[in-house]
Length: 86
Image (cartoon, rainbow, N blue to C red; front, side, top):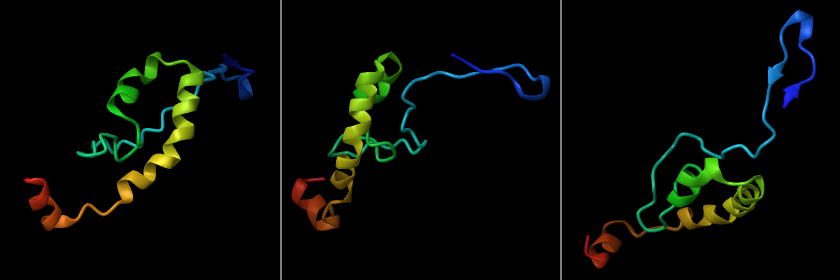
């Protein structure tokens, strides 16, 4: 979509009407939850983002706040690692 008219003779700016990515460029996948600690999306959601419809993107964006709690859980430190066998 073209953005109206340019100001002071400048050409119009082209913009797209789509749901923007929640990426904040902190790309680390949590080893147990399997979601990115930066944007909270799964690997499948991240890789498929550019091919998704706005509806699919919006649905994911609405789920993200609920996922934040998954990463706030205390993992248990050394004792938990030993118990898990790592």
